[in-house]
Length: 301
Image (cartoon, rainbow, N blue to C red; front, side):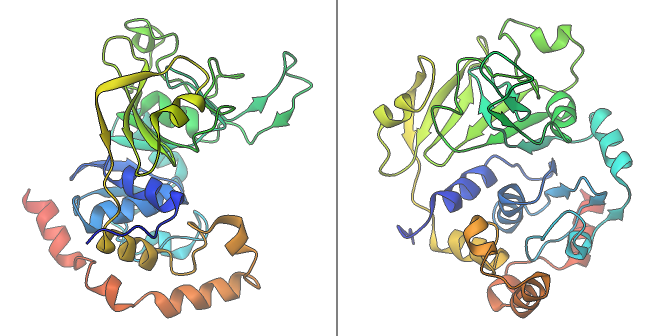
């Protein structure tokens, strides 16, 4: 059964989860990417392995985490190692997918999460957090799924600062010439539409619009002459099962509700109470595969 009562953030999580394939290893962060990973494991990719920058590999998540050091990041994990270890594995090409956000993206999937400025780097309009692990992920992971809001000041002709490489200038072999291991971005998931990249030109194009969104609105939110797929699709409404699973994974609505919801909590103790009270909800226990069963499947396949 399809539902029409959903938020743009929930649609982003659902569309992102569909970009993950069974048996893949996904480098995720805290937030909507983690929610997407949880959803994928519960529906079409039960053997998906989630990896955290803090060193947790293969946890079986029942809920989202407050931060990368949250104890729940280690729930039934296959391995608890260190940050340098998982980033070392990343740079060796062991991970299939990474999920990244940014302040800006251009037509070739290059990302900026460092600074917004008008010609002078030292006098910026906005100084951003920087790369973190973004450059490592974008450079080395098998493919990158980008998540960000569709706004004209974000989808720009050229990023103000190249934090994380996409397809650089779009010329054939651009990534290989500079020694990048990974294959680059594969998709850009937004709150209004889904974009992919052409295999030859490496340029981003519109593949799917969400229910109620017009192509003209999407084109007006992009800072270049956007190409449209000849087989443009409209995404289906989320199903009731998808929304129930998503909301069960984020019972306090801290991820999907954003800063507004987080401000309602009295502190970390209130968050812990909410998550513990919801951790064993029937909707979750019915969806999570027993750990012993999953380990046996990983061993035998």
